[in-house]
Amino acid sequence: MSENTALISTPGNPYKIVDCNREKRKGITASSLEDLINVARNRLAIPNDADLTIVLEQDGTEVDDEEYFATLERNTNLMVLQGDEKWATPGSVNTASRYIVVDNVDNGRRTNDDNSRRYQNAIEPLVSTLHGDPSHISLLGGNDLELLSDMNPDSLADIVPDRLFLEQLKEASGRFLAEKRQAQESMALLQMYATGGEMERA
Image (cartoon, rainbow, N blue to C red; front, side, top):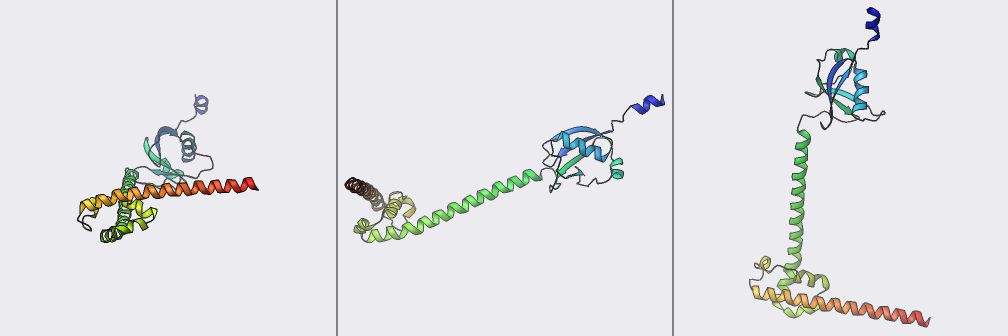
């Protein structure tokens, strides 16, 4: 009887293990802390060279010796930490994610505000100058003409209350911009032909 009993291996007590993110949960049995670490490494697909720390999932208390492990109740929830991973209360990961999203939204809003401010600072002097002398439009470069052709007349009502003027300025800027681009394309073609002719003569 005693010989048969000696041949039967002790399966150990049942425990519930979970990874740091609480995404993987496994029910296992282990007879010692060392046994639990080996089983956890296998069940959670953790590399053999990774350093593991076992803590109570409830409060993060570290289980670092066999004596304390022997006092744990059956089905105790244990968290398996790898390397520098730290225990965190349930929901803290999701909370951090929400904060990150909010921060990104805030950053995006600040970026949009900065871009809007730069746009206003660039276009307001142009509109004011052209309102005083519209003929200056023929002297503007492509970037300024593009700003004017894309402008929203309503956003400049404080600078120039005359909406009709702003609409006509927007339309005229679009025409000048198209003509300037067409002229640039024509110049590029002429340069290409000239370069081709020189290569043929060479």
